[in-house]
Length: 415
Ligand SMILES: CC(=O)N[C@H]1[C@@H](OP(=O)(O)OP(=O)(O)OC[C@H]2O[C@@H](n3ccc(=O)[nH]c3=O)[C@H](O)[C@@H]2O)O[C@H](CO)[C@@H](O)[C@@H]1O
Ligand SMILES: C=C(OP(=O)(O)O)C(=O)O
Image 1 (tube, rainbow, N blue to C red):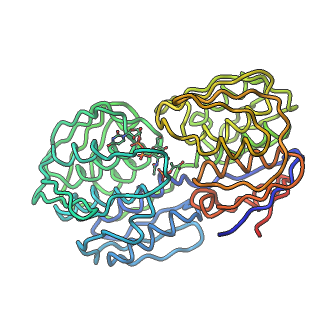
Image 2 (cartoon, rainbow, N blue to C red; image 1 turned 90 degrees about the vertical axis):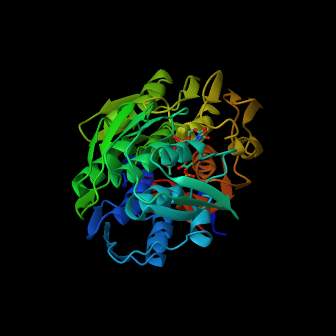
């Protein structure tokens, strides 16, 4: 496993260009399965999750080629093969194969998805949606077997606000006959991105970005060209790192509205956040006040930035409280931050961070993607060298992390 070496103590200064969103990319790629002709996806991030999804589509018979940040997918020869083991187990977003295959073929056999281990991650709401559209569901040997023949539009109320279930039901419903209405839908920007692609393919989706989404499906979805929205989680990570190091960083190619919860919390801490049309500038003198964070579905504070934000709070004055309302057990970064000198107590789904304890570099391990991001932020703040193993997790979601941080003056390299 690769390691990242980080020498802390230098402020990050300069501009960083934000890549396309991971959580859009891993939904847009399987969405291509629904089309009968080629699709081009632009602003594609170079990250491991994308590489894995490309391999999955190739295994299914798609012709896929890449030209810098453009991905061309010809799905016309995709076959309804069973996708039970191997790459599907490496990704959470492999669950989207269920909706996409159901929408195109009326049947699917897909292994239960993998992804970051954040505690239990059920897919009951996805299944509830597929059943409402007429699918029969059987669990056999670690895989979900779905059969429907022709799917029919239906009304689905989600008991839990779920990004994955909302997208998966949109995918299936786009290939269904008639109208589907998703109530209590998730409102994340990535959902709007997927709906934009499906509409360009010929579906008629209204309300994406609100909690009621209406989808009129069609049998013939065609190829198109689509550009992925910026990755708000990558951008938020650089904003946090800028604040953490007492830096002056402009994150370019972002949609500032998507980062409002992060900007608001940084401002509460005493950080200056200047907003342009497509950029945000973060200026920090490293004199930070503690704040409380409660993660919530969009437009609330994103759980995917909870861990890096916790690292930032270790250097703020006072005690901060971080409550993860999405994943009760998303605290694998806490012990590692403790090894670097942080004082954090976890009670239930809340972490209490006593700020102002100096951090020192040591050997730490990322066991999931955003733990990795938290430890990078901590390493940049710490005195001395941090040796971070588990860099492969970080590669799942951050394009060219070392060179982007390096161009900002951060000292980070791969061993
Ligand atoms: C590939 C992708 O886009 N991943 C993101 C997506 O994950 P993912 O789509 O898996 O997350 P969900 O929005 O579905 O999960 C939200 C909450 O709902 C629960 N739940 C979800 C589905 C279900 O059927 N039943 C159920 O109980 C989950 O356990 C969790 O507590 O949104 C999460 C929440 O913003 C992010 O952390 C992930 O980065
Ligand atoms: C949890 C995440 O990803 P996934 O849902 O793909 O595991 C994440 O991006 O932080």
